[in-house]
Length: 101
Length: 390
Image (cartoon, rainbow over all chains, first blue to last red; front, top):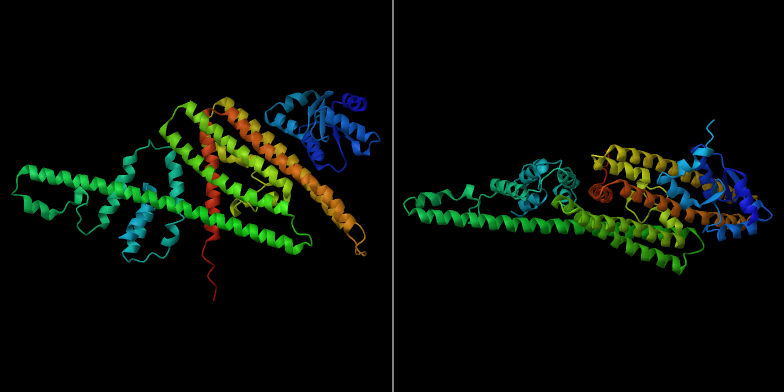
């Protein structure tokens, strides 16, 4: 539990992923398009990966990855992010963290 | 006589009157090589496009259609019937009865009018029957095409691989095929109901019910697709369950949400400033989400490709590569689900932005669009073979 929450609150936009997960990659592409640099943690390459996976599932993600945290708070998985974006709620949420170069 | 009736059945509104006349003249033995009556009489998108334009404009005046039929009828029927229109009332009768009392003439006129009216009603019923048969024929042919293609798909795969489909996969696909056939039928019924309801100007409350069931019908499709994707995701992605024209537009196992918006929005005028803004934002978010998923799919392709191609080719063993690739393909199911989720969200957002009446028009527009794509597929499949060059 701790490691996930710790990592989640360290950076503005955090995505828990697996190196083979292409859906996770799609999410990072979306954030990129919205001007946000997300910090990606590949849990399959983390020694505590199994625990982290269990934590994420316990937190309510039906698929452990991708799990997206914004401002330290869990937004959800791909479904939640997409719904939020289409309803117009994602960009306001990401506004403080947008870094347009 | 029969041929002329068939040609009348082709058309109801004035923009297509020329077509009807040309075919009528063909029945009178004047050559019109550019038309193929047998095809046109069954598959005529012109008719549908005519209706499309009219529906959003006309005030629902039923008399225009029947009077046009009668006008066309007049120019054809040379034989004297008691059921002829009063304009063409047998002139010899007038001469014969000039000497008879006035009320006998009046009675004869009334009889003629009544007979003409009955003739029009009979003609209308016959036309309706023809239309229904035509639709049924189109549906049956499309069903046949789907089943044939499904047969080809299944045959192709089991020949190419050493491992045939498991029983559960084939039954899952067969079940979906049947359900989808029913889904299309219900869809067609719903479109007709929406069209009638919009033209009849029913209350918003009643319209709301139709909109809800229309939306629910799409959500039902996404559920069905999710189930069959678990059995065989390639089946869903290949789009073999759809008609050929629909497949042309396929994106991750279905239509593109942004494409959907492009079809819908022109049909929804007038929109308020607020609505225009929200639709614009929705279009943009859709596009961004689609791009992200498309890039994810590309990455998946690259991954699978490099996995399958990896390892020394000098050796005969490819099992490790293929087995690893299998795991990666599991992700395809997630992508199909995500794409459907995007479609569902797009529909829901549109229904939130629009008024009930606009949403009804939108659903009609969308349903009609896919209906036409299916008709296009049928027309394409039955086009005449290319003439061989000398």
